[in-house]
Amino acid sequence: MNSITHSAEPQSQILLNDQKYVWHPYSSLSNPIPAYEVVSAEGVKLRLADGTELIDGMSSWWCTIHGYNHPVLNDAAVQQIGKVSHVMFGGITHAPAVNLCEKLVAITPAGLDKVFLADSGSVAVEVAIKMVFQYWISKGQPEKNKLLSLRNGYHGDTFAAMSVCDPVTGMHHLFEQVVEKHYFAPAPQTGFDQPWDEQDIAEFSQMISDHSHRLAAVILEPVVQGAGGMRFYSPYYLKRVRELCDKHNVLLIADEIATGFGRTGKLFACEWADISPDVLCLGKAITGGYMTLAATLCTDKVSRGICEGEAGCFMHGPTFMGNPLACSVANASIDLLLSADWQSNIQRIESTLKQQLVQFSQLKSVASTRALGAIGVIEMHDPVNMAEIQKQFVEAGVWVRPFGKLVYVMPPFISSDENLIQLMAAIFSVLEP
Image (cartoon, rainbow, N blue to C red; front, side):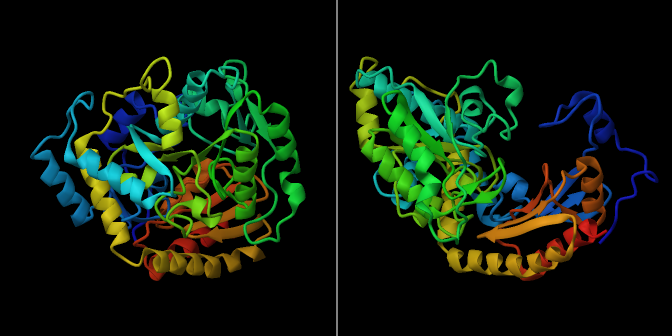
C-alpha cells in the first residue's frame, strides 16, 4: 500500500483549483481541511491521483453498498442513458419509475402502498413532513402542526429537516432562532440488546399525551440514531412508539435513509420491531451510490387524506422527480441486493467487526465500541482532530471520516473479511498511542 507524502509532492492543479473555487460539505474556506483527489474507484478501493489505494470504510457516506464500478449497475446506467436520461414526471410516466415504486412497496413494511420519488434524503424528509402537515390540514385539523422528535436524532440539512434534528447535537444549533420549534423527547437509553425498561419510554409517553392535539407526527430514526451519535437502541422502544402514536392519533414517520436496504441486518430497521410507520423515508443506498435519488412512502390512509382535501393533490413536485436514469440504477441495485443471501453476508460483516473491535478496549482514549449489522463504532473520550486524523488514516491506507468523538465504519457490503481486518487494523494503528 502506497503512502501519502504531502510535503514532498506539489499539489495538482485540480487540488489548487479545488481550494480556490470549491466549498465542500461542513468545511471552512478560511481554514480548509485538505481534500484528496480521487481519480478512480473499484470494488472497495478508492484510487488517489498519486496512485495511493484506500480501502473505503464509509461507503461514500453509507450509500455504495455494492462497492464501486459494479458491472451490473454500470450496465443499467448505460442501457438507460441510451433511451432517455431524463423526462419531466408531471403528466409523463416511464417503466423505470413505475417498476421501482412497485418494488419498494413490495419490500418495505406492510401498508406503505404509495411512493413519492424525490431527489435526496433531506428532501425525502421535507416531503414526509409536508405530507403529514397537509394530511391534517385536509382533515380539518390544521392545529396539528407540530412534530415530536428524539434527542440525538439527525434528519438532514434543509430547513424542515433541521427543525427535527437534536437542537444541540444535530449540528444545526446555530439556526435555533430561525427554524420551526418542535417537541423533543429524551433519546432512548435502553441499548439494542438490553432488557427493556418501561421507564425509557415514560417521558415520551407523557409528551405525546400532553401534546397530541398539536402533534401531526412523531419522526425518528428506527433502532439506529446515525449522525446524531451512532447510537443503537432497543427495538422495543420503537414498538412502544408505534403503539403510542396509534393511541393518541399521531402519525409516525420513520427516517430510514441511513438504515434502509440491509445496513442494520434487516432490510429495513423497522423490521426489528415488526412495525410499519405511516410514512417512510428512503435514500442513500437506494441507487447503490451511483446517483442521488430518494423516496417517501406512505399509507393509503395518508394519501387519501391528502388528496381528498381542499388542494385535491399533494402540493410538491421536484424537477428531477422520477429521473429514469436514477430509477433504472435503483432497480438494478435492489435486484442485486436481493439476488444474494444478503442477510448472511451482513451477519458475517457484523461478526468480523465485533471481533476486530475487541482490541480497541485496551486503548485509554476509547470510551466504548459497538457494532450492529454493517456498522462499527469506536467512541472516543474526546473529540478527534479531524484534519490530522484524516491524514493519518490516508497514510494508513484507509478512508475513514470521523466526526466529533466518533470513529465509525459503514463498509460496502462486498467487503471481504480481509478488507475488514485491514480496515480495522489501520484504524487501530492510528488510534494507538
